[in-house]
Image 1: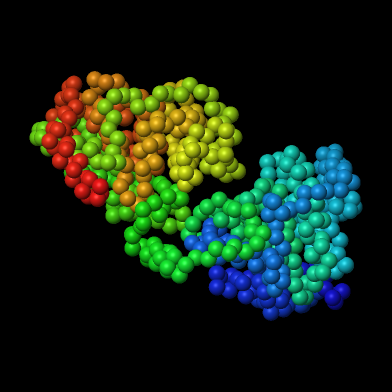
Image 2: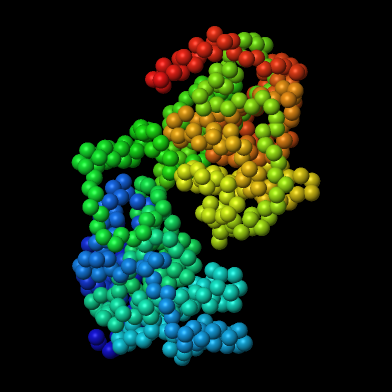
Length: 545
């Protein structure tokens, strides 16, 4: 190594899904940006994120196994499970000593780093440019911590992060750094799976040092989110599932030719937007709604159409946008037969739930302020992952994909609350109310949601409010907001033409259709036995029962 070179500058190379493996294998002189000039070594760095998981999961996990076990890749595994958590007690005491000095003297980041170096907490290298780069990388990491974390370097998490950075540097970075030559190759790391705050800063430290880094997370969580300002190459696989343990051996199960072919065709169809989806194919996608603007007549046309042939239905990046109906019908048609035929035609559908007694919900009196505050992530919004892992989460018995859909709907109604505040309420009070009520869905409503195959029949909640069997409540309105965000069709009938939902929700959230007559104390008209039997028979034939 030429000692006249005293600066090392790393720049991420442009990656694609087709070239990243070839670039990762190349020695530094064969990569873009490599040069030796004016006392500085310039190198091209490979940094990539691979979020989600492909259709062939066996192949995915076998590749991961190869990346860290085949010498040509030279990738070193980092994960929450694989990290060595042991630390010398002397190092732990030294970290506390530096933190105490900082509390007394309010050190600058450069002096803070100098104290860490003085306490032998920074790695050393026989290569001068690496030795200098270790110090620069620590300064950059502390600067990022001070920028992101509340109260900067006096944040109570600093000790935990520093302890982790020191022990992981000694346990995982030092052994590979001893063999490193920046004119040939820098250390290469593969991060896999879930992460905590310290893991984020450790990876940031490795990036600033100039190491190569590739990140894999089958559930699509991004460990660099919020910590990297520079754009990083990212590849999105089509599926999102919880991360399995990192493979300790290659999988022996092989997909059949027919299986691979069918999955490939399925993927191509989806990518080309053909709108052909197998039953429950989208069950792990996160639903959100696009509320359609309709006429009264269109309610009964669109209401019977499956989701994927409705206007603006869209699938991509683990999300499915469902065109849904949210409407109120005021009054009654002059043509009573048509009025009842239309109402009954929707309420008799297999995925419909007709409500004739109000209220739908029991308003919760539980104090969820603590849970509400703790459910927020770093971005200031409700974090679905935090909610789903909490002890108070009542929907853990549901499939994971459905839980994610409900949790994301809760996030959205709290982000932009459509519920009118009471005279004494702040917007934050409204958000907390919506959060609380969302955790107390009645069993029939949960079962309605469970039937929802997002590309197929859209479940319907039909409320017939003749004001003879109770009144719509504020907690009912909160439930309707949640269901609307989830993509459920909601049609509210009010024969006397009185306000009910308007007392609680912003009028712009739903359509309102006025019919010719207002009728008080109108009893619900049941379909005739003959008609009901005929209708059910037709449904059975259509389903092939």
